[in-house]
Image 1: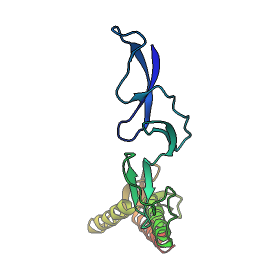
Image 2: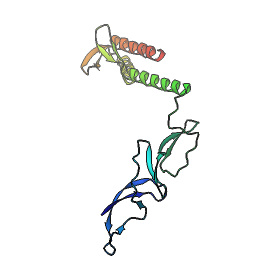
Image 3: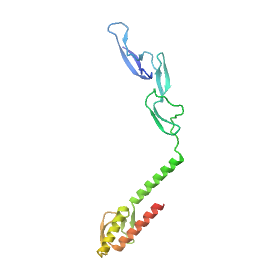
Image 4: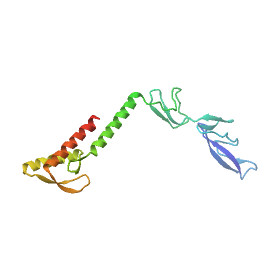
Amino acid sequence: MKIVYLFDEITGEFKGEYLAQQSPLELDVYIEPVHSTDLQPMPSKHGQYSHFDGKKWTIKDETRGIWFKPDRSEVEVTELTEVIDPTWTRIKPPQTQDELDLIAAVEAKQTKTQALSTITVTTASGNVFDGNETARINMLSALQAAEFLNQTQAGWKLADNSVVMVTVAELKEALALAIQRVGEIVTA
């Protein structure tokens, strides 16, 4: 048995070792794969590969992976045979000011959306009400129903999920506070 080194028939890239078996018909003759050599490849570093040119091993730069064009678009190279444009780079270009501004605007909107969905307000009597959009709609509906039915109180689920009787006046106060808080968040 003897070790031979396999290489890709198109790219010459080192593919691994192979244990060649001795021929049962001929003494000192080994059965070797077509694309192999008994020359040991040179060790390669990260970002490089060992390449066999038919006579000797050399080290070449690895070209597979992500590249960036001058227009900042991304290209994925999956084969060593793909041509790399000399204007491409491995370094991701920095974001433009427009992109940074857009990211900041999206993050600000997400922060406001989160703040709007988690509003709570505390009335003068100390009750803590949810003040998000759904809660405000429910308050309006409850106030309209109370007006139609001439009610002065209503059962209400507070932010801590406890159910209490509140006055229509306190419900109006909670709604007004929630609307004010919406204005503060939106205009911040």
